[in-house]
Amino acid sequence: MTAGYDGQVVLSDVDLRIMPGDFVGLLGPSGSGKTTLLRTVLGAAAVYRGEVLVEGVPTATRPPRAGYVPQLEAIDWNFPVTVEEVVMLGRTVDSPLLPWYRRRDHALAQGIMERLGIARLARRHIRELSGGQQRRVFLARALVSSPRLLLLDEPTAGVDIKTRDDIMHLLDELNHQGVTIVMTTHEINSVAAHLPWVVCLSGRIVAEGSPSQVFTPETLRLTYNAEMPVTQYQGMTLVAETPHFFGRDSRRAESGGAAGEERRV
Image (tube, rainbow, N blue to C red; front, top):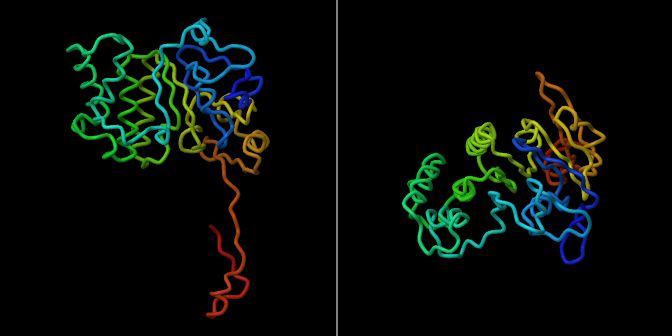
């Protein structure tokens, strides 16, 4: 499959099979095609060669029933909508022509918001929330449609450690309940290293497999175009970014700082 936008190729010759019940992380630098791959599954990106099948049906013929959590940067926060209204939008999948929601729709939404710890925020405007709370809201919108396939674009970016762990534990629980999950991430050690399967992208598929198989210096160099040492610690595969060194600080030297001293960031 080759895909992109407005005639510009973003992903080339992608051959990827995701089975029901898989939990897959898409890894790569900005512009590597992670989001585009999610959008091809949704039928929202142009496919120039090949096809994308979900449950055997081409997405060009029928967009799949999937829950989707976009990057927060892609959302218009000025739109006047409350947390509950955002979550309830997920129920339009089952009743797109009805101008009202049923009692069971509200009950389902309430249960999911309680599960995600945002029920008390139901009447708040979406732009008033923190980044972590906003991510939970859009995750709730995706889950309220009871999807068998869940697509998430950087669901843990910019949140604190506890929120990230809460989100990942919830996703793991959903996966064990039979939901197929595909998510993009920039976080190699804190997220991708704990997933059962990762796919490294750089305009194409560089490698796929378990983190222990994929996280090698050569694969990471081809993915990120940078040297990234890999080490093993207590059975875990850890990736280190090469530290940056800066030259002498002339101001410190003038004020009596040690000559030739380097600062590491």
